[in-house]
Amino acid sequence: MKDFTDIPFSINNLDRYIIRTAIFKALKETLPLFRGTLLDIGCGKMPYKNYILEHSKVSTYTGLDIENALEYDTDVKPDFTWDGKTMPFNTNSFDCAFATEVLEHCQEPEVVLSEVYRVLKPEGFFFFTVPFLWNLHEVPHDEYRYTPFSLRRHLENSGFNDIEIQATGGWHAAMAQMLGLWVRRSPMKANKRKYLSLILKPIIRFLIKLDKNTKIEFKDGQMITGLYGTAKKQL
Image 1 (cartoon, helix red, strand yellow):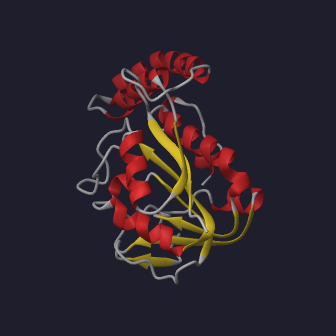
Image 2 (tube, one colour):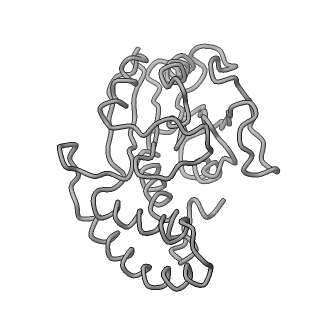
C-alpha cells in the first residue's frame, strides 16, 4: 500500500499523483485527532491502515465496505460488510471514522452520513475526502461531485456540527490534474502516451509547486480539485 503513503512522481503516475498526495496530506494534518476505536468506511484494501496505527493514538482499526464492493485486492478483506443503509454496529461504537473518496458513490449520502453519526460516540469525529475534478469511475456507481456548500448541508442534515471543509487544490492543481488524467487515461497509442508524459511531467511539477502557495476561498470563479474536512458529533 506504499503507493498511497509514499507516492512516486513518475510518468506512470501523473494521473494519480496529485489526488493521492492531497488525500495523504489532509490525512496527516488530521491525524492528531485520530484516537481509540476507528472505523474505515468504504475501506477497500485499507491502504492507510498501517500508517494510521503507527502514527496515531488509534487502538482498534475496523474496515467496513459495501456488500459486493469492487475488489481492489483479493488478499485484503473488510472486517465487516453492509448494505449501504444500516451499519452492523451498535450506536456510539467508535471514537472516530473516516471515508476517503467514498461519498461520491453513495446514492443517498444522508443515509450513509446519518449512519456514520449514529455509530460515532459523543464528541466523535469524522474525516472525509471527495473528488471534484475526476473522471467517471466505478461506473455506474459514480453518483456525485460535491461543492463545499452541498457537502456541508448533507453533513448538517445528518446531525454533524463543527464542520470544517477545505479544498485539496486550486486552479494550478486542477490544470495539473487534467493534464495528468488526459495523458495517462485518454485514448492514445502507447508510444504517444509515453512521449507526451515525458513532456508534461515537468509542467505538472511546476503547476503543483505554484498551487502550494495559493490560498483557496470558496467564491465565484474558484476551481478546486477536491474537498476534505472534519465534522463532529456533539454530546
